[in-house]
Length: 339
Image (cartoon, rainbow, N blue to C red):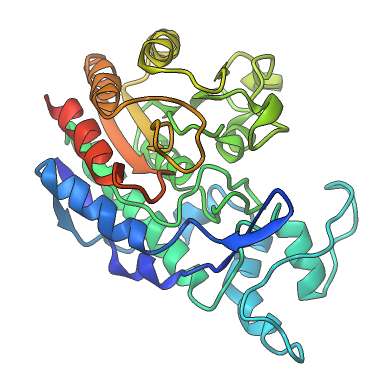
């Protein structure tokens, strides 16, 4: 399987994270790259360095205002007397209809949904090359490869068109899907992360040219809380082109595979010729977020069900956090795709 990774993804090294009112170490750390690399190589992947497709594909998904903020914010923030090393907002607008400020602090509140996505000196560089990694894998799939894996870090599926959140800055899966569509393919995005891909849903919610499907823990009491409910089906032209399959906390392999079958049926009805798999490995029973109880062999079964569709596959890495099972989970999934 063709695989892509850029070493510059490691320069984003966030320190802050808040859970239940406590400041904790951020779990989206550069060590994830090493663990995931080992897991992919154990499945037979040989990594290639991605090409640079420039800003155009990023601007096809994200607003110029937001991209300008991500590129310039840290330098502007650093001019504030006694500024912390990371940008963490402490004020947010009441809604997107409010006025857009000139202050970098006010813009941070506009463009950062929560404090799990602090911006440091290396954030833009890492996010940029994470997106280029997804684009490089999309290109080889568009050119005829049956499957490709993009080791993207930071992840992307919580990033909206103009809003970072949940460790995510650029929506790699959405950027890749739009590139595949531009190259004449009909993509569906299948998000198998334990958290709902709210940014991906938001980007395509009023569109009918990309189907979005997400299997995730019920957001009634789980991040991202405000999106991912079953009644959210799209709007305008996009009505019926968004499918959410929320499942109870603690769902095991059997329950997950049953929901996945429903999602794959929708993809078949859509007539997709390529599936962008937003791969979160945090559905595992030992992942720190403790959402589902999917086993390591379960990931191989999930991959096998996806591969059985016979469609071209682009796997974009999303979540999956440090545990002894992270590497074998990725190995199981990628081996299952090829099995």
